[in-house]
Length: 403
Image 1: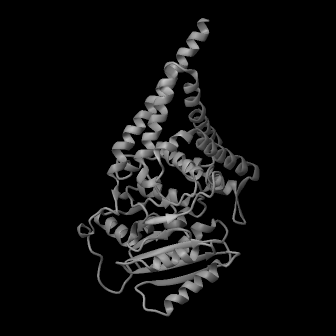
Image 2 (image 1 turned 180 degrees about the horizontal axis):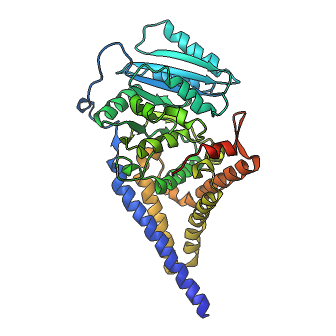
Image 3 (image 1 turned 135 degrees about the vertical axis):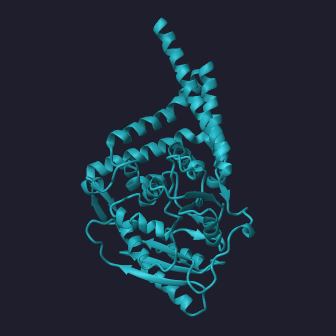
């Protein structure tokens, strides 16, 4: 009886400790997330003008492998950009579908009319040894850049006409070296929204977006849909040549910018950049197949520790709610705090706080995705992605220290 009572009290104490941690995160997010600049609400008249002349203000680099369904919409949205001049470099990275053909079709369209923008298509048929496909494609394209700013994006992102102008002028106004504009994900079901809400909330435990601009804080960010970088700083860091075997090259690029002391900024702008990333409730499982284990730098111990943490997040609050008494109070406080984090992140995620009710099953999907990524990578002794296998020994050798 005594042992049972002690165990019960210990469970209550731990439940409240977990609740306090979540409440602390909720308060921090509610205070911090509103400080991120919203480019859809900013007064453009307060931003610096871009230089006059014929030179491009921005080089947009669009690597794509087997993106025939989306690449034309992406390129046409870029060509519809207003307020600046673009050099667009689209890279067909060994596609086996009609991606390259559709890139050329869009390039031919702009030849038939006057345009502020140019579109160059590069076709790659081979991958040199010691490279991953995407870093190689972006490094190659960056060498062709003619502007002082580079934007690395994906072949399924769609841009509003003023998105790039606002982002570039804001980056100049902030004296940024690296700007991330949080994309708006197109979510077609409650399940997709629930999983994305859990994914973004888990990410805020790793990197506080409102702290990214603080040079003293370790927080950093990088995203494949919108990494806007000052070309001089990019070249100083060695470009993607320094990340030639990096699976999560977008986040690692952000980490390198922050670690080197360059000025990093995050902005939001609902609807300015849109993309489909999660297809169905388990779509994120496929997305994290190559990225999940890489985010732990291929260290099984670290990955397992993170998975234990996710397991606790899945089951402990539910167990607290089911126990009754003070434990239920702690469990309720946890879910209220999670809902508040969802509310704080609404400008980015566009996910209702009510979907915190599905936090447990959604986090269980994330747990499965990370575990699956680790197991597949270890069993295969490498990462297999879009028809190419990258040995684990090579990935680890180039992973570098830190993070």
